[in-house]
Amino acid sequence: MASAIEIRQFESPDQLLDMKEHGRISIIKMADGKVGMHAIFEPGWTWEGDEKPLLGSPDSCPMRHTGYCIGGMLVVRMVDTGVETRISAGDFFEIPPGHDAYVEGTERAELILFAPPEHQH
Image 1 (cartoon, rainbow, N blue to C red):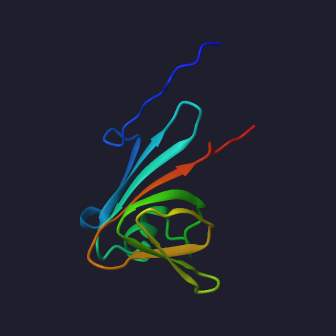
Image 2 (tube, rainbow, N blue to C red):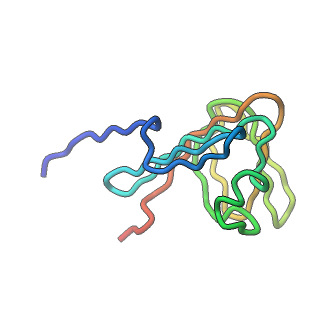
């Protein structure tokens, strides 16, 4: 079986979560089901106010996130404990489900997120 290199760009996403003036998440899905996301959260963005309504208003974010912070400061709070963690430029991170978040400061937070295929066999 021949292998081929697959290239996708966030400028042509499969899905776009548009949070208007507070940012967006561009989502691309590779042929094998792996997902990549480019998140831009502007100053003033909060998970509660901007993203929660787009997800059907769960109590906290139900997803696990693995990613890399390109710039800015994102504060992630674990809802069950209230513990806040600051993620900033250069951080590679793993965030478990059950969190919310907000942008701290006057600079936009920019992240690249990775996810495995939804159905692994």
